[in-house]
Length: 146
Image: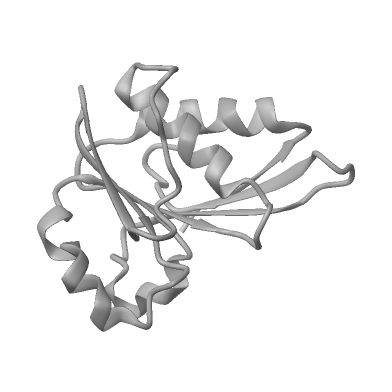
């Protein structure tokens, strides 16, 4: 599995990474977003979804309470999961997890999906950088595209 590390000096850099990843994504992809609260997972998700939808004004609410939001984009359906409040992998099927496997899936708190997270998922981990607004991104997977 390939691994890449990227320094993200500010939120704009996180958004630029999301836009690049949206351009590389295709139906059936799973992007697993790892990181503590406040590390920029929602910033990444919002920029990713707006890029895919080709709509910079797209309303992208956090799916913290609904657990999943679905979007139609020119690349096809996108399912944005936030599994923070999920009790465990069994709850995924009530959310329609198996029905969206052909879609692009963006998954926050993917560790709560357990073994249900596909082996081909791209793992993106965001951690604190050297400054308040800076982050480090570690990308694991997609060796054929990165």
